Image (cartoon, rainbow, N blue to C red):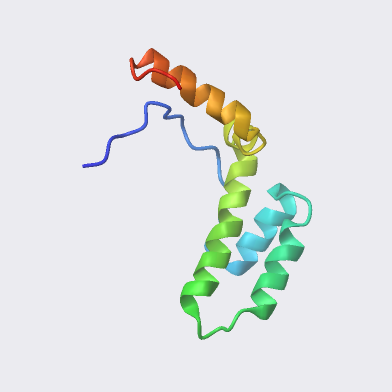
Length: 100
């Protein structure tokens, strides 16, 4: 069984995103600038018979709307690689794994 994160926080109140109409509305309201246009472009070029691709596209943009509603998640997206590495080094040192 996979280990559960100790960083658990309640999910933000999410808008419904089960249909393309709902996903578009969520992106219009909660998405980053350009998300809705990028979704439309990705769907316009997708082969509708390639259901795994269509699913990946919709999941990607659903995830973006969810991140925008989660201040901690959205802040994490903007972190620099160096900031992430520093944080990991501190966690490893605290856990006794040492830092290199």
